[in-house]
Length: 375
Image (cartoon, rainbow, N blue to C red; front, top):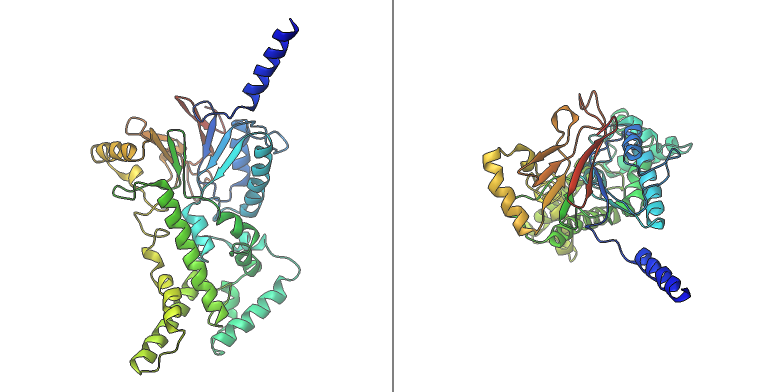
């Protein structure tokens, strides 16, 4: 009897310690949040992933957040801090959070803050913000040769802007974290990402992630070159950084034409040329992994063979993507379940009329949309 009891306990311990295979593991995917803190918590609670105190209660569940936490809504900083905390809590419980990059994360990593509001910037402001802005303006005016209108510059760099840009830089708290995140992840037979993989793309998910990562690193290297040579500052906007790179490249060409090239010119061209063509990179091109909208826009006739081919190429059963808000705040399945479009406009009006918080639950063969107000 004792031997049988011991063997039973040993078997139970083995099962508890064995890795949970993707086919057995519960997966919950949540798409674009866009600063909607309360809505995000509501769908986490609806999915059983956090308790009333906001702490992880999902056990071994895998939460996949497909990008676009950033911009528009006011709670961006709160959301990023929550995800960082939940990431640690989930890991301790045997669960996991896969935090993917969306196009809005990419935009903010390179200083394209078009959709970040003064309210968002203000959440990074502190008692030293006014002094930092004054120093930043003085430094920018010095580089600009003194021809920088103070009022215009201050309006474009509101309180908290300098700190915000620093936080998302290569050495910043959020910038360092986001630069480690992938654009695409495959769990079992499901591919999760923000936008989509266009037909004709590389047949390797690892190659897609490497391309995105390398494009970010290339941008960072070019921006660092400009800063080291006193041609730009860390808080320069996307447009200002590109303009600074273009101006320096024009000076290099002029020196070359005059027969006065400098030893560093070749290195400068290698560092700065990619900044001027960044919109043609995987970070910004319309058919790239951060922006592609074909899964939502294709007609049924056009998309069916394309989706079938993609699933075959990537050895997958389905794609799960966000990026394009779906009508009436409803998760949309297309091409016989080959793709689930899960951006339901969580932020809601006025940005997304009819939007609501949602998630997609995958357990084995069962795929279920969840909504904060019901199933």
